[in-house]
Image (cartoon, rainbow, N blue to C red):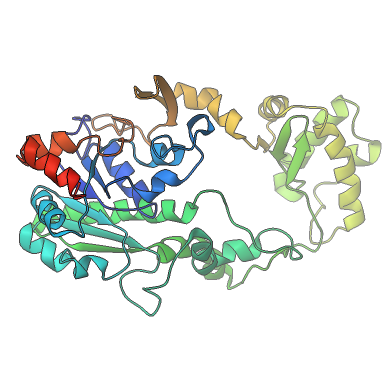
Length: 413
């Protein structure tokens, strides 16, 4: 029932039982063409209560968070903890290629829905479990909100950023570590699918969000055997990298030696043209300049003139100048900048998705790449609560309308 028949995963079906820890995995599989069936408890998934909301109307059917992470999915309601619901789910498993879940370790086993149970129903099924710390180990039963995942998984990121006199911080508002976990879960699912193609066997993909984010900060240790500390750098002086300008910020820094030809010299020449660099800066010997040998006084004198120059220009003007003068400088994009980016527009990155229930369309970020033969696209908006119950239960599983009504009354669906 996928609407993206040209997608690379269009022959396959996914049963998505996840909460916010795994919703991104199902979205990516759906955008790649799989028939993803999002299974919620009667009344709706808890992730529907995460804002922000469309036009700030607090409503489980208007969560923008839910919209973003559930595109290209159909939706049904089902209580798998009740015997009747359990049997219906087992029927669905027989039709599925993947089962995604993010329950605490052991929960699915207690229901009789662990991987050893599912493979008896469907030997080729691939079960993907996404949890904070994985299915094994001393922390497997620990809770894992995003803050904990940053601290115990990507801790070096939190420890090394910003000033040492402030608490560590993370990318906040929505759980970014869950996105990492969901993306890596897709990789694991695709490897398992390839394995099944050569052996006919499914398998259990055990995804630990901690492990998904843990490998990112380890490169500095692998390369330099150094633990980066908060506020610490390798150079003895304080150097500005992010500069304010007329309408935002740009990234650039003074550099000596060979790299001065792409950093310092062309920017200073531009400043000279506009009368914003004194003779000292104009005639500075960049071949001998080194952050390791200079003083903070010299850096401050350079930067005082530079920030005054930047504040007379917009990001667009500085970008145009960087191209003209071949300066290694770039603007830091805001959300509005990305939305209005001519590059992203030319690539067709933004996708308008129809929301008939709202009487409008909403613009979404599109796919991450352009596959010429098997495109990844948003094929439908996120499902309403139980939107496809009749379509899946009656038309695909053969449950009568009368039985469906009773199942609804009994709180099974």
